Image (cartoon, rainbow, N blue to C red; front, side):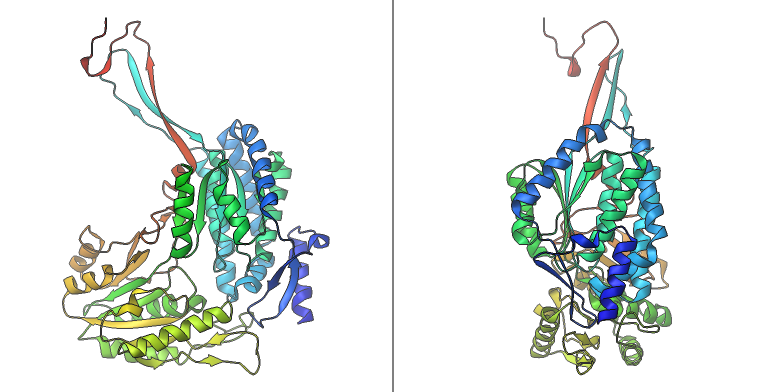
Length: 502
């Protein structure tokens, strides 16, 4: 344990975190062995208000900085993230329990979005539209919003922050970040690297703030009228509270909430490809991704064959310390996650389900304070109540279908709408799934799993997933306000719609 603490301190120091500041009322616990690592400061509601004030004070200077110049700060941040990728990935690992390749992949997402946002800093495009009045120009322009509040979850402790922050900074906004209170170490390192980029590029010092706080502090951020946009990643329950509070003060909201993702497997699918795609999507990150595959909807003619292959593959999954080479499945975040998994499995059995493999706690003797589990596959008689709920643990429910219309109906008849996929070699089936009559999710894939989105596309979902979009495509627009402009150079004053006023 002492080695883990020393490695953690070394990684923090390498990223520029002042170790002398690591004391306070929040405890950083690692899920690898379930032990406490370090204490970090706990910010109060008053501290949150001060952070917002600092970000607001820095906004005018940052707003008036040319967007391509703002992009240079984000570019430098990306370079530093690449330079300290190993250290930051280690901190992601001790925060969230991810295997090494997944932790490094999360940091790579940050690097990628910085590259994307750098290009975007020269492409904050508006439109010019034809005016019905002679001698007039009609156009739209985009302007920074102001202070953006960012709330992130434990399972991806830093990547969603970067999706928001890279776009917000090139848009001319300033940011205040509340990371998950159970994933603070990688957040401190990420913020320290951004602070260095800000200093080296001469950007205003206050454009980014971090607050390590609990629910009360989060409420202070959500309720602050100076926070023009709240971007919150978390559960649907959290979104139900955040959305109305922000709306009540007429603020803007960007919500990335729960997912209950499904893959349809056609009788025309490549089953070997499906096996690999489904296994990673369902068991990767110990089932703790918002895009984790939770429902497998399989054509009845291939269901037994595919299920047998999946069960056999699950029995070979290596479970253990995510720092070790060859490990594929790390720990659940804490005991509450384990209890939630067991409750869901019990409910599935009560509703007619059969656990085909997994579900048990393992390595308990070696790690009595940590929670390692065998990923589970459960054969269900239909889409019962438990199947329609998101359980943040590695449970894959297997359902069968006869017709593609039936499969799509099963797929869409859950409250969540984040990620989806279909495995098929039939172009008609693939196109139908991607059409308006197909998947109702924000992400719809063909012949890949539900997880592993690239930063170039907009990330987000519909229904109880919240409707927000982050990362690529035109997600940058969420961080700006649109103005429609009319310029009259005619010397006359004609009114629109032929109105006459003399």
